[in-house]
Length: 308
Image (cartoon, rainbow, N blue to C red; front, side, top):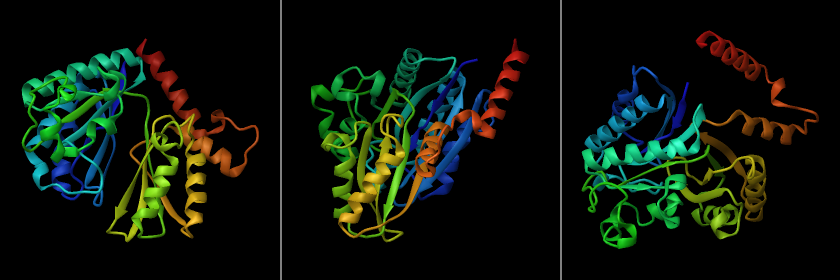
């Protein structure tokens, strides 16, 4: 059995009825399962985690993109998180019985359909990128929706699929195959955005920080605090706990405490086990000693036997 994960991001985090309408495109579809979804008012963004067999999953992702284009008008959208499309990004991640080259092929198939049928420009990113300067999502997104009308005229930013004009309300979308990513945010006990910006700069790779960390500063006006919002693209080589401790030390320089953290969407169990092992100073500990993990492994083996 082949299983692929996708975590589409939509530029709507304030109108729950709109988000639910988009998610409804995946409900009841055989071979596709919704694992998690969340909304954020300050970011004005929603994140949905799906897994499924390749073909039905691609069909669901197309329908969600179509519905988002119908319900979201980026001309009226404002939020703290950078965005360039109503459906901003659609990653595809190999989970079971699949590999990265297969997910690259799937991403191109989905991108082609979105471009041709919805008339939305599509950029391939990460492992699917057709050019090195398109691998990094933040480089594609630079300028955001408003800036893309001029950016798309540059030959180096010609879309991989779809029209060479920005969709007037739905913008553009990035589609690509990638490894597991953890969306990890750290909240700071201050409303000074310049402090969060300095800390984000200290931990993100592009400005001298950790190799597998992308970070921006976000003003959480609803909560009266600021946040370092991160994408952890390899939790094994840039662990959550190590980045968190660096942020804690950097914040202490400005007399600011860490007041909370959050994970958006799903997270690999190993990332949490590594974090527990670090903070609890556990010796001789392995995932095989996590009860739920053992039960799931047994169920998976029994399911495999039944399907033979």
